[in-house]
Image (cartoon, rainbow, N blue to C red):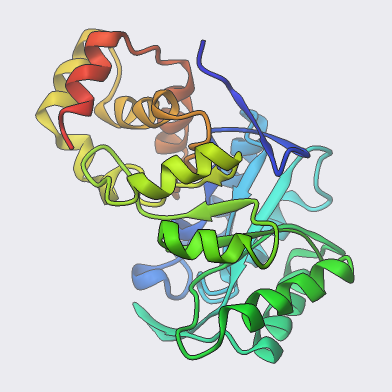
Length: 279
């Protein structure tokens, strides 16, 4: 039986298949993507379909994705977990600048609280570790925000297993976000560490940025199940490990429905063996 629910930090139950908001912004994660009405419709439909984990970031847009989340979903229904990220400054399309100074992290978190219309952010993730700022100072700033009640849980994005171990010496870590999918498993050691400690792993690019939807093996298995290749790629993640909580993003209602239907796909041992071999 594939578990449908993961308890974030052992406290917040979320459905493992969530929704990510990056695709609600324009090319290079910059500016708007189409009209706000379409984005609002997708977000509301995701929640109607039972999504309880919304993954966003202050720099998607920048600011746009968080504002859309609030416009679509506030007042938030009970049980909906909002995760956002800080620690990166944007200056243009695909232009990312890491910023981990404590005073900047505090300002970013407080700005996210205002945009999301929240008193407390359920999961605040450090978008990147700043190599120019000691880890203890970066996580110390987030810990201080948590003590003040502005953050409930802390996560990390794009880290190694060694960095996660070091972070756990400093504070409790509820989640990580790294690139991980059928054909990109460089973060396998990190996944094993998350399994050992009950840490949520939110894989980004769960569909390989679209490439897995055209993979021949995925297509063959999809045909046998009567579903799309994308659903197979997402179903593989759900079968692969109980801590994997993919949050695929899309600005299309049709693609949203297709992605969320992956939760109903049941892969057999032979299916998993063939898919595992794609690594």
